[in-house]
Amino acid sequence: MTDTALTIALSKGRIFEETLPLLAAAGIVPAEDPEKSRKLIIDTNHANIRLVIVRATDVPTYVQYGAADFGIAGKDVLIEHGGDGLYQPLDLQIAKCRMMVAVRKGFDYAAASQPGSRLRIATKYPGIAAEHFAAKGVHVDLIKLYGSMELAPLVGLSDAIVDLVSTGNTLKANNLEAVEHIIDISSRLVVNKAALKTKHTLIEPIIQAFAGVVQAE
Ligand code: PRT
Ligand code: MG
Image 1 (cartoon, protein in one colour):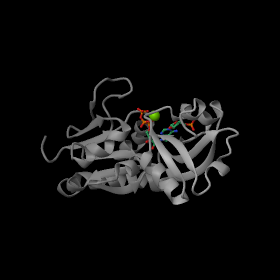
Image 2 (spheres, helix red, strand yellow):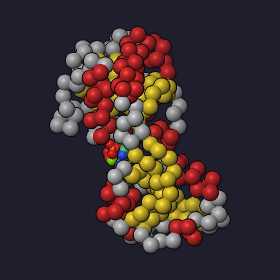
Image 3 (cartoon, helix red, strand yellow):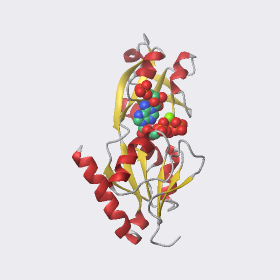
Image 4 (cartoon, rainbow, N blue to C red):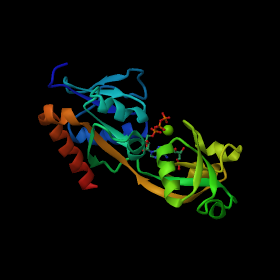
């Protein structure tokens, strides 16, 4: 690969789907659907542009180390990662959701979260959770999970969870309710700081095309 080639890191699922129109606006069309292919490197209609398909939480890492020149990652993932080595020029306004505290219906959260009290919190986002409860003066025992956080309060693993909510259907289906809003989340463009300089003429038009779509909406 020469300096005139671009590698873009994306995750499958909602981010990939919502990124397709952005890529199209920049004239980039993937040669394959990663949902249907097992390939981790996907070619595009441009011989010098390829996509690498990684876990959502790994996107910042690939971009930070320059294994991908840029990528798209949720704000949730970026806060937990820390954003080292990453330039974040654009809020793409896709994959929107809210970071919330949720508990079993009927659990007296107001009483349990008084300053000085102690709560057990299950989450995939220990950094965000720690900061939120520290600001409230609530002590927390953080239990790190990698998925299905909604189960934790139902089986006594935790008092509450810190998780993403979009429609609210998952909480409802599991007899949970959101009791606190921590932060609004959307996905961001993340660019490797060195690549932004060395590949500026390749990357800048893509950023502009993405920005045009965001502004039009
Ligand atoms: O799923 P996998 O373990 O492979 O990886 P991932 O969960 O990290 O990736 P993915 O594709 O599920 O999410 C990628 C990004 O999408 C996240 O980093 C968020 O920035 C964003 N996003 C937007 C969401 C949601 N909305 C969302 N609703 N990510 C996850 N969810 C989950 C949430 O955790 C909960 O379990 O969906 C469930 C709730 O959805 P509702 O609609 O029932 O409220
Ligand atoms: Mg998921």
